[in-house]
Length: 269
Ligand SMILES: Nc1ncnc2c1ncn2[C@@H]1O[C@H](COP(=O)(O)OP(=O)(O)OP(=O)(O)O)[C@@H](O)[C@H]1O
Image (cartoon, rainbow, N blue to C red):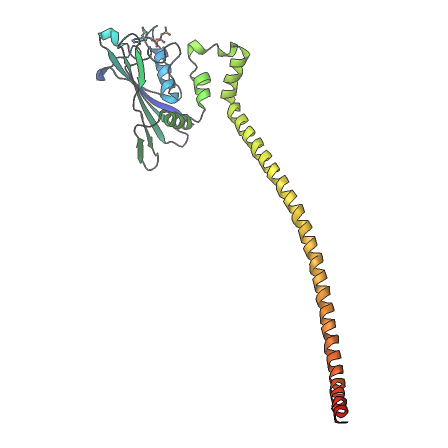
């Protein structure tokens, strides 16, 4: 079974940006309860788990601006946030993602940027570590979802469904269908089915073409076979005629020499 092992939060929501502000949670087996008074950061922990796994910022944060610790609190223009998440996949290998982000308050609109992220895979048996720095967000998302053994849609909409999004099953049918399609992978399934239908159509068309060619070739082959028979018949006739010619030539030879003798006698006479 895949498990979430460790989470480190820095510079997210009310968690401070300083080195000493880093908060670390070690998740215990079989259960870890997160308990605390209102506003202490329970939701933030769930948001960080979701962000660490899927790279998605929580809803209602103006595309991540409200997710990072507000720099205005300390009268600064920018603030850095970081989520470090370690999970164990079902084989026991460890996958750790470090995702960093920044908000800048320059001008009217604050800007949210995701910064370089890294992912480290550690083999449980050999303890070999492979780290990919400056990885693409999509690659990290895929690695983390693979390590957890569930799709991004299930992580986002079911396991770490944000409290603000929890009413999605009551959404209008079109949106609901989109969510269900994503959760059950039907979009992917339909895409594959469409691809297979297209491939089979292409093959059928090619097959039809080849069948036409085959008919033509069969026709040509039967014509060639009858021509071959005719040729063999002709060759047989030719051989017979050659034989007759040979016979006639040998018959004609004594007659010719007789005629020559007669012609000689006639001349002498
Ligand atoms: N961008 C931000 N910068 C600094 N602090 C923030 C920011 N966004 C939210 N906060 C603070 O973070 C805290 C949010 O905590 P959170 O919602 O995670 O708590 P909670 O334990 O889930 O609360 P509740 O039990 O009420 O749901 C609040 O105190 C809020 O004022």
